[in-house]
Image (cartoon, rainbow, N blue to C red):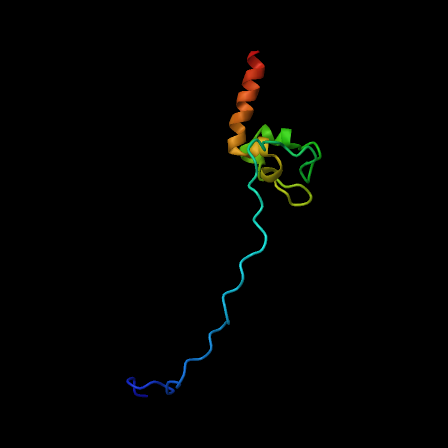
Length: 102
């Protein structure tokens, strides 16, 4: 082939656009963002290998244990916010400190 000529000749008119009009906007609003102060451990969460592995147990070594899962595949990081969420850990420390000094 000759590089200066197209493979097939151009069409006389443009083809129709892929859609007739833009799609409609979503009808429902997004859900509200979580409110502050949600640093609460799930009282029902336990590790999948030992029922004694509660969120309190996770909190004793969060760096190692927050990746653990329960039998439903929910990680301690998702269920044990007080123990595993970095913003909650500071609050937990302050709360324990206040209790120990009063």
